Length: 150
Image (tube, rainbow, N blue to C red; front, side):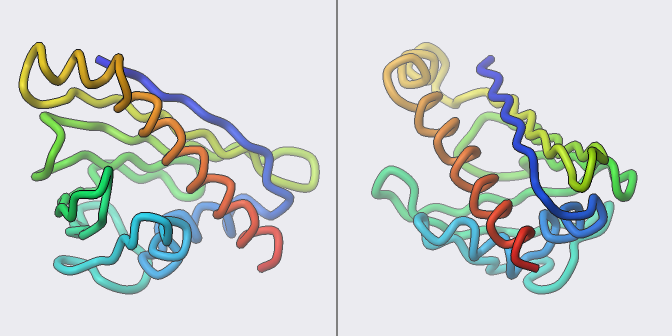
């Protein structure tokens, strides 16, 4: 199972970083490259524990939908979402926030399992893991820009 971890320092308060990360409208701004938009479930505002959202996006040239649910939240330190339905066999994405001098360390920990057994494992090694890492990093860096100008 591939694991992607990324951390970034954000020059903004922990509460701001936490809330921006679970804001549906901000999510669409940070994933503009994939044209991500909320089409069902919570489609605006801040997501809370137990909330679900269905995202529609274009990944690898294919329009697809993915439904995720927030299964755990400890404001402003962490929340975890899991895939309920979508292209992956499964995924768990944990977002952690640690208060640091004049800012916040934001950590993404994304664990996923590709569909299609051996073919999925092969896809991971050839391109998917690299693609997902770039997606996580790009989103985090976009969130950093928004938070630091908030």
